Image (cartoon, rainbow, N blue to C red; front, side, top):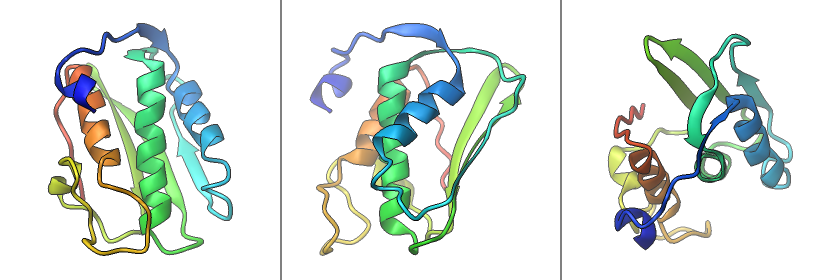
Length: 141
């Protein structure tokens, strides 16, 4: 997190298929997502994306882990993408309560006292990865 904030991370940008990056994140979370239906909907004609695949895999893993942690057991998680002008919009949707944008701040958790493990850095790391890629737009609903 400190390296992301200090700008000390050099991105290894390469042209990548979104499906491969998402698939790698899903593979690392196989046990965490057991009993969950994860539906991936990525258009076949989606262009290659210039990104750091390792960091983006971490971003997807963090978001998916949060979705699994804070949504009712057995509910589905959706991952999708669409081309919007010169950008590709990627989303992860679930049936959880939603998240205020402050959850992307360091050491912020949805529930101050919780039996669920975590210290409140996962989503902050996601924000740092997105910002390292030159983006800042988040839409949380």
